[in-house]
Length: 139
Image 1 (cartoon, rainbow, N blue to C red):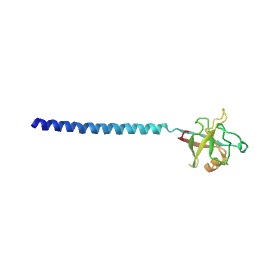
Image 2 (spheres, rainbow, N blue to C red):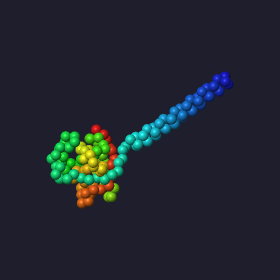
Image 3 (cartoon, helix red, strand yellow):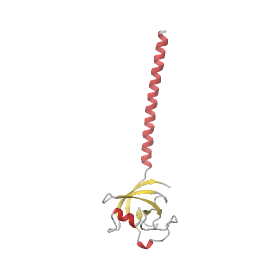
Image 4 (cartoon, one colour):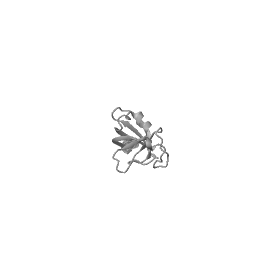
């Protein structure tokens, strides 16, 4: 009887230890997955410009007609249809736009924003600004 009681206690103790180890492993796995998700969020830094008025009414790379009043952007790095948050690094203003066009092949700028997007970021007078681009969602 004494040995049976001892065996049951050892068995129950080992189950508790295994359950705790499983929880620790699960927590570790969740933490790793969370870090990987954060790494997947792409962040780019560079210079932003904005479209000239002559491009109003012209077709963009994805077939839409460019309208300077819409919140759109041209970008060579990201896929068309990607939603991005663009932050002006000089005044910390940010906006959300959809990429629907491409820049000229030789263009070294990171994004070219619609006129209304540039106005909201507050750099119309300068023409160019340093920005941070964060990928929010892909099509």
